[in-house]
Image (cartoon, rainbow, N blue to C red; front, side):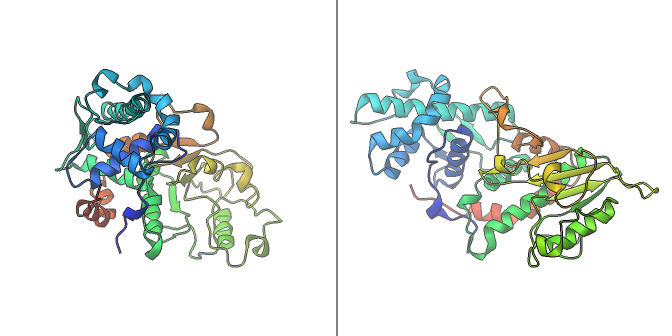
Length: 349
């Protein structure tokens, strides 16, 4: 069974974030039998998904089109679409689609060496066939952002999310002191895990000993759940040990999130939550790694008021950190099977 589930791939619904729209369109370009995908083809797909109903298609697009209308070049749009439908609705759909493509041009300007697409003056998006390592990194992060299009059966979606968690070890190491001990705490633990046990209580207990901190008295095996093999929302932990065996160690927590609900997980590694397990009596930095872009058209945070507690490392920050790492071939090898499938998969339009 392949990773990608073509039957699930559709343009975003109830979604006003143009990053999400751009991600799906980029995936459509990668899967298109032809190397190029025109704005006309995107419009046709939008209409097909709405059974030809222009008003429904416009409602699906309207939220995001308001945010990107300043990027749409209407003087070009008139010659790029053919339709006998309501000209006013048609024009609004044109503006919305070209606005999203205008935002994709911003991505190209932000990371020209990583972006695996070219966009011409007629707003046709073309994939680059002979991709560089940097362009493959972009595609890896793009696919990790679209986990909802990956088969759950056979554990493929879990495999991809775990691969992203492991990928984040490299940027996490670059953000903490070199002499710190780094350990994987996630539910898919391996030899680098903080505990030999997969039980949540045992992992917490082992971590508390390494930090020289007591467990919360109410955190018992029974309260933790005797069969709980979760991670409490923590994927990576790092700490710097001293010979004195005292607590107050420099400590770093990191959470990785692939889904659209990543904002809901910003508090997963927060001290207020973890004090329910371990009596942590000091503050510590928290990192939140996401494969998505959270940028607006001016390369600012899309909505700074949504960011709190944890330091956000989004797609473009991840690419910058991965560029600085030494183990670059390993990034690609982890995803080799998925990249090969992508090369051999076509989506019929």
